[in-house]
Structures are given as structure tokens and as C-alpha cells.
Image (tube, rainbow, N blue to C red; front, side, top):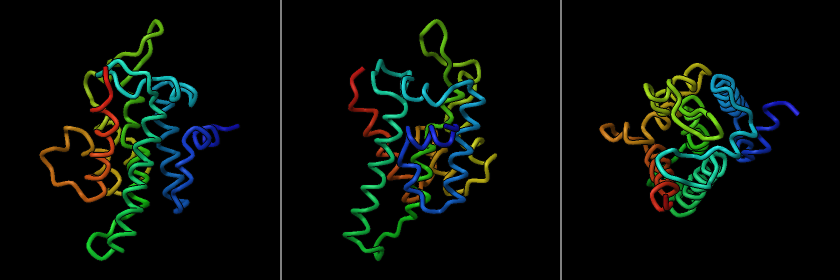
Amino acid sequence: MGVREELTALLPEIDWIEDTALRDQVLATWEDALGRGGWTVADVDRMPFTLAKKVTLSFAQHVRSVTRICASVADVFEEIYGGEMLSLDREVLLAGALLHDVGKLMEMEEAGGAFRKSAEGKLVRHPFSGVALADAHGLPAAVQHIIGTHSKEGDPFKRTAEAIILHYADFMNFEPIEG
């Protein structure tokens, strides 16, 4: 099984992206981040999603939960508003959700069985490295915007509707977690 097949098996929500070119860009970004960080797909399922708290939830679980929450919100908004009051780009939202933390693969390292900030991670936080990775693979500015504004770094900026949804979905998966 190749890396893309392993990624899709670990993160089946990748297949929710209907636009094959966008899906390929998301997969290419993940592949690149794995390679640059020296990780395997299996590592994504065992590494923590944050170093800010002691957690048992994996990076993969976090990405899946955030992506599913974003998809659910998009479904509810479509059902209730019918695209009249608020029209979301579901493909952009899904791509942004799947990639919002991809920069963490360059921000973290494992040493002596423990996860910690990498030298690069001490200098460049994951929203910035995530945007750079996404840009390198031609992802649209709207997806890069979601990645770059999902965390505190995005607070001074006006977020798109998709970025607002992702921002809250991400924090729903961070703030209530004890640690």
C-alpha cells in the first residue's frame, strides 16, 4: 500500500472531497509534510495532536473530528439556509479542515520516545508552515486562508465563513480536553 492509500485509510474523510484535483493537492501536501518531518502515516495515529496539554488523543483523531464537525456544520447550514443566507464552499472547508494542522508534522519531533517541539517548530508555528506546504502544492488561497487563520495567529484578520467554522471546530476539539 502506498502513502496515499495509507493516508486515505487513516483519514477516510479525504475521499469526501469530490474535486479530484483538490483531493490530490491535499494528499500531496500531507505526503510532503510527512517527508519533511520524517514521519510515517502510522506516526500520525500515535502522535499527540498538541504539545500544549498532556493528551491521549492522536493527531489523526483530532483531524478526523475537526473535519467531521466542519462537514456537519456545512450540512446543517445547507439544510436550514439552503444557500440563501449563507453559502459555503464545502470542498474548500473540507480541504482546510484536513490540512489545518498539517504544519505540525514539521513543528514536532520525537526524541527518546517523547514528543517535543522541533528546532523548526520553535521558530515557525504550524499555521505558517502549513500555509507554505499548501502553497507549494497549489492549493487555493481560500484553503491557505483557513490554515493560516485557524489558530491565534488569525485573530487579527477577518476570517471567511469557512475559516470561522474551522476555527471553532478546532477549538471545540482543544479547549474542553483536560490536560
